[in-house]
Structures are given as structure tokens and as C-alpha cells.
Length: 259
Image 1 (cartoon, rainbow, N blue to C red):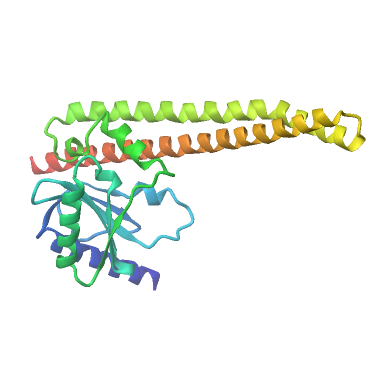
Image 2: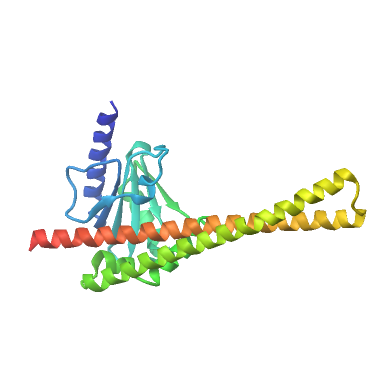
């Protein structure tokens, strides 16, 4: 039964891409728990963002990097089970304008009247804008998808991979720094509790200690959240670099097949 549903979703995705070709050029396709029997001759790779999640609570879907008739790039995610089309803004943040995204969304609404078209916003909590800026500083998505100098683009992707590794190490430094200082801080808090129970400490010192423990606790909470935030950003930059590398590999394979 599950296999039948997946096959049905795959068929719907193939039809979706065929209809999408009428309003935009499909440049690359990302699949989550699907395999297309009919697909354009473009790089096809797994959807790394969702394949990395182990809870499997996400419906099978397909995403595509497309170029509209004005030359702007967009990422379109089609979820056949929910009859929904997501326009992902983050991945093509530097390759399209707000006006072009609005026009393309309106075109999708017209082209697919039976589907719900939703534009995904940018999450500050996940650091998505910082991820987009970090990637754009090294290599543009347009070069990855359509650039002619593959060797230069591959070198830029390699630099991005190195930077993502350094970002991950920085997040470890922040995490271990907070853990190292946490031990004496907990010892101080424990001593303060003992003094409070025994009644041997001066009330003024107890009040001061409570303020210090509160401020210290807030500092460690901030440091811990910052470390987690840095790790999230580093992971996203790394996944983006791997995705770019897969696209370039697929482009080489297709070029060799055609040549």
C-alpha cells in the first residue's frame, strides 16, 4: 500500500515537472523518498535537508531549482500528498528579487489552480540569512546550476566546504568553553546553597551570591544557545556545499553522456 502511494506521488511529480516546463526552465531536481521514471535531463540528487531527519514525518516530495522567463532563479517544492507547492525563498535569496518572487508565485497560482502555493519565509532562529550570505560569498547558485567554468566553480565549492568545517569547529569551541566554565560555576552555586542552609553566611553576601548565580545562569544559557545556533548554521552551510558538489558532479555526468 505504501509502495503504491509512493509510485502515485512519483507520477504526480513527473506530471508536475512536465507542466512546470511551460513557465520555467528546470535546472536541477531534489527528491525525498521518491524515484522518477520520467524526468528532465538535469542533475537529480537527494533532498539533503530532509533526508538528514530521522523521524520520517515528512511526506515524499520533489523540489526543483528553476529559472523563470525573466532569468530569475527560484526553488519550487511540490508535495503531492498535500497538494501544496512551496516557494522556498532562502535557497535563491540572492538570485531573485521580491518582485520576481511575487510574479512567479502568481504564475504558479495560475498554472496550478488545484494546488496551494505557499511562499516560505526566512527564519532568523535557524540563521537562514546568514547561511545564504556565507554561501553567496564563496559561490553563487547560478554558477553551480548554469556556469560554464565547472573547474572554477568546483574550487569555490571546495572553499565553501572548508569554511563550513571551520564554522563547525568554532561552534565546538563555544560549546566546550561554556562547559569548562560551568563546572566552577556550579561549585559556587552549590556552596551558596550550603551557606544558605547552614545560616553561616552574611545576608548581604547571600543576596550578592544570588544575583551572581542568576546572571551567570543567564550567561551560560546564552552561550549554550549560541553554540547550538552556530552548529545549526555550520550544518546548513555544509549541506549546501555538498548539494552544490552533487549538482556539479551530475552536470559533468550529463555532459559526458551528451558528448
